[in-house]
Image 1: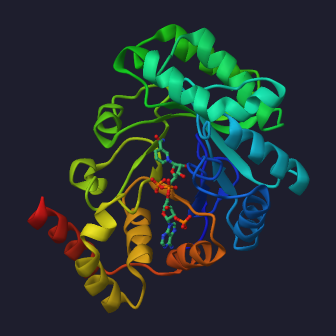
Image 2: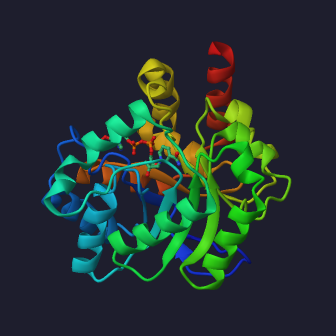
Length: 297
Ligand SMILES: NC(=O)c1ccc[n+]([C@@H]2O[C@H](COP(=O)([O-])OP(=O)(O)OC[C@H]3O[C@@H](n4cnc5c(N)ncnc54)[C@H](OP(=O)(O)O)[C@@H]3O)[C@@H](O)[C@H]2O)c1
């Protein structure tokens, strides 16, 4: 399985089947230093990965700042995807040390999300500033509410930002259930970021998908990977791969999926994940994965 062509109108650069997720890279408690993050990005690039996914709320703006400084050091060689819609803190100067604590307080006492056109426009400007770039490759609404999706003014704001060259591709990051609803030709639904794994795919029904291009996340299914480890090991053994490679392969072989996002700060995990792109799973394994989840759901 090689890198696939992507683009809203079938045009555009090439995206590697595995993208680097950064959901935890700058989070308090994950324990990664800037040096670890730089090494991770360098290893990812050496392995052929050319997309890094983030959000303004990851690490309460700290993740975008970290990536901005690394990408500048590396000469901006990667495609960058970010998201907006959750509230977070981006405090000035040394106060920035309290961003992640501030976000926790904000979430506890205020609304967790906001999708007014003005807020989203400010978020986009903030992301460009923190990521030290003039243009984002992908910009997603982050788990938008139904009313946000129906807000024509918000859609117009985003389409204008694309026209102005601030963003190349717009999309929606949402649950598989909401993704199903987006098939009804939402102007921002050409790119969808959503969960794709044997458990979510029961709803997602990859083979029935006829919406836009999917950037898959949560391919290990969170806690499910440990819960189903024995069954996964059995199927993976037959393919001669690891259980996590099996799940990455499953994600890549679902209809509409253009790449899967996996977060890791470990070089050995990056190598294992990228190796998964070389193996096409048999119909038998795909059926076994689906049967495993149906049986236990
Ligand atoms: N749009 C959204 O709302 C949304 C939601 C969730 C995620 N995302 C995006 O999608 C990315 C992927 O999300 P995710 O939910 O899959 O998880 P994640 O938060 O990125 O975490 C992935 C986990 O898998 C582990 N891992 C990775 N490769 C492994 C391997 N080969 N063997 C064992 N463990 C491995 C990592 O640990 P190590 O660091 O130890 O490798 C990490 O604990 C996120 O980082 C984020 O960019 C978006």
